[in-house]
Length: 93
Image 1 (cartoon, rainbow, N blue to C red):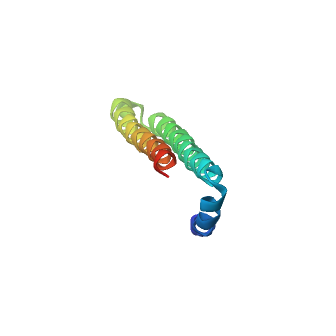
Image 2: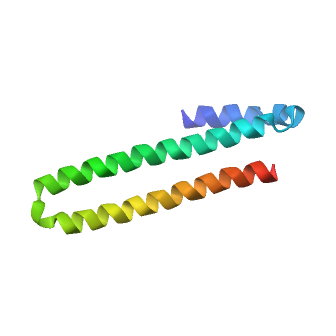
Image 3: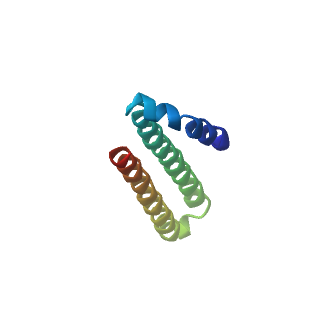
């Protein structure tokens, strides 16, 4: 599906030049939307798996919680970078 989306966006480049910034706004919206969707799903999955792991081994709750928070922070950082890159692409292009 990602390949198909990339192919559609590549074909839209000449149309974007003719239409002005209309396609750029669509691209920025898609970029930000996909970044936020991925982050939301990923953070929900991390929370779910953390709760299950703590339920299975309550004695290791602090270790599990610390590891899952580290992963969540890294994912949030990647999401913020994706949003910034989408906005920079809008400004430059």
